[in-house]
Image (tube, rainbow, N blue to C red; front, side, top):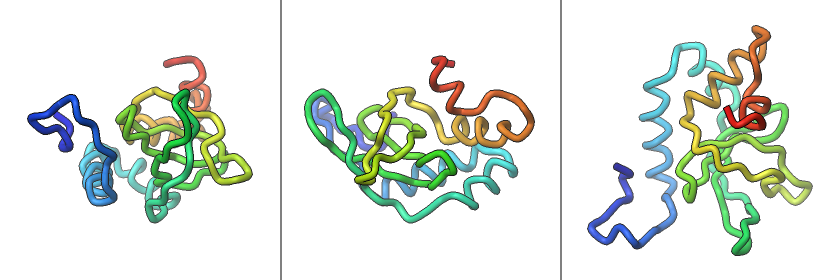
Length: 126
């Protein structure tokens, strides 16, 4: 159950910095040592960036800078995603894969070994 759930389950609220930091720590504990090393090299202080949705502009947290963009956490979808950033710093290609941190890091650690990168996994829906 999401740590933000309350008795009033119809009421949604954005994830806080502290809640996201705790979620990252929890999900990193599921990762291999190699995945943890990769994350340590690209993670950055949490920062909010704009994301365009059908209902308007909202914000998500960028958690890491990557060669091809940024890894971000979308608290509406409750998952991690990877996207290039627009010139204004916003998310260029919003996704809704609801990935756990280990899934994104797995894709990043296997790019070097010739297995599909996270970009190709996300684009193919796998």
